[in-house]
Image 1: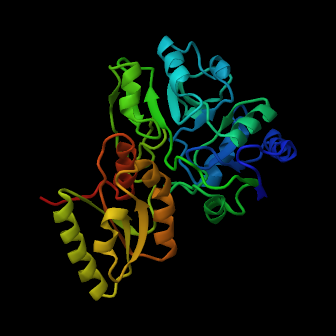
Image 2: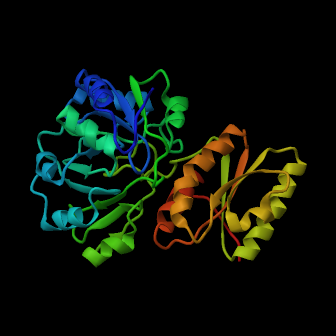
Image 3: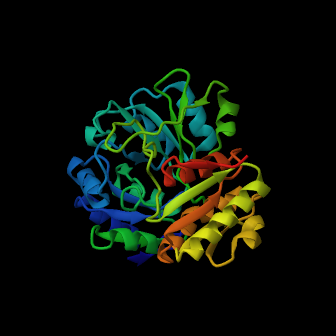
Length: 345
């Protein structure tokens, strides 16, 4: 693990990482969303190591990262005008576009599909490494498959220590949830995964864009990462509650008391406004205020991992409002709970 400045990375450290990638190795690195596990996207054998290290099924495609919008035609065949419009609006940043795959990208990256997911990250370390390598990188989240994504280098070390060649520690990530994925190979375009760019912002560029959530079973072929029903999941059972705030808090408090009286270890993932109502006899991870969803998204995976470290058997969480970044937060919690929602009326 090498410490690197997130804003001004040392070129010598970046070159060490580029050497690893040129030799077909794997490097974990920070992006603005979560930490990614990088391989040379043009090297099929290196990309195969990503699936092996993460224990990820090859039916779950990877995202290709580039270091400049001008590189898009090198990895995607004939990007449509909308791709350029979205790139101008949101790149560099947490937006991934599904496009037709260029022959330069081996099929293993895209799970054998003729499409490819592409983004230009807004992080100096990631951009510097891609440029030093002189090739795009394939980089899913740097965690074991289906676990909460890593937002700190130590999360990567816990999951992948001994499985990969190098970790670049650039400190905590700033967005905290993965990129939004929009499929431009269909008409009208569809958001496949909500993320760091709110769907409302995409619709300002093209009002036809719609959200098409999919909850695929393990080993079912998908066109985008983050579409499996069980994903981002801690070891503990996650109980996701939805409904009017006061009724939800009463129900959660009652069930927490029941479980603790039975000797169960209970964790709570709580918005700051709810914390005082839910902290009795539990370990609580504070997500931040409901009025600051950027803080909530930044703290989400850190909170889930801290409750796993506490050895919680059950994690309670109240569903957030689904506007803006709330849709991405909801999606991560829904998949962590394997689609189980406790509705309170």
